[in-house]
Length: 271
Image (tube, rainbow, N blue to C red; front, side, top):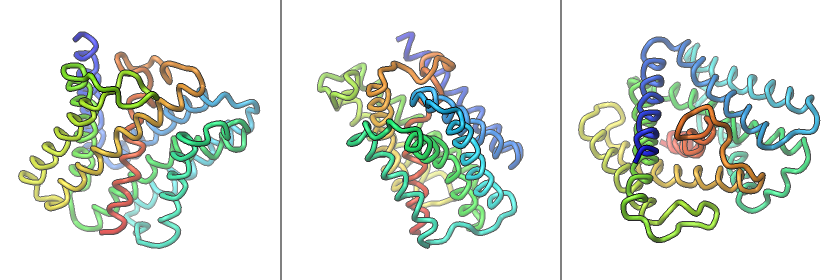
């Protein structure tokens, strides 16, 4: 139970930082999201073990360009969020990255493939969040409230999957991660959707969408968790780092965010 308490406390602090950063100023929000992106990229670079430092520099430069491109669109309220081939490309690239993790992890041998993968998997989802917030803002919704709710849904998915798994878990979910159970997965999905129902009832912003968003997050979050577990198992490491007590590293804490951000981006692209 001490590990559970640690996870809950860290998760609460994490959401509090997101809330304060989101509500205080757009510039702080951009800086905070960019910081998380670069911390995850740094941990990915450590996991992937690049051979040439030039590729590491390239990953940071491309990542910075992505964050600047999407962040500036949000900052200046320019509409970069329309249904076209350019905005569908990130979804396609991220899908390839996930497929690479589960089916072709051995392809991550060359520095060139490591560079592309680290940027697409570790930075692109954060950049897409700027597009989501920009879209909501253009549609006259309280965009930061919606973003905060997204992180609350992620916290519900992670925390309740852990709690129900510890209390009732007996059926292994996957060989990729021995500690994850079917019961934990069902519990995480159920309570995340319950949270979505509560949000849909109490919030005027995006009313009618929260249950769908919660269901998408409830499914996408465990996929992100398993993807990172598969990646760590392939490279024979336990945690991406030890910076967050009870969670390992930032990548360990935000793995579910990476997949959920892309799924939510896709959802808003089509509504």
